[in-house]
Amino acid sequence: MSTATPEEAAAIVAAIERFMRATAPPASSAPAPPDAWHATAILEGVSRDPWTGTHDPWTDASLSLP
Image 1 (cartoon, one colour):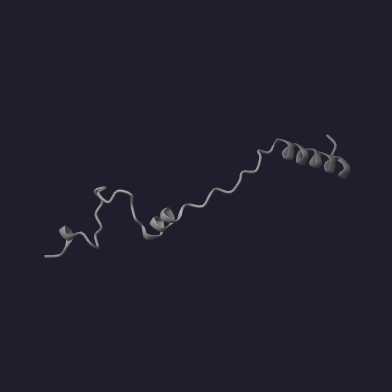
Image 2 (spheres, rainbow, N blue to C red; image 1 turned 180 degrees about the vertical axis):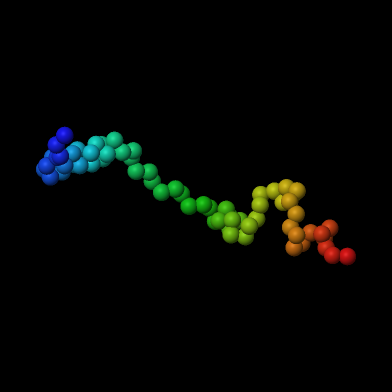
């Protein structure tokens, strides 16, 4: 088995790069930024449904000390 010459190696790399460019998926556009209400809700930690059954230990009166 013989080794490839530098010219042969460069040709192989060029062919692989050409193949990768030809078969790559098209670049996608950047996603749209969230609307202001959604961004504010995320920053404030607001959920859509306040009655989900989860309890906040800092404000839940049933978990207060005697």
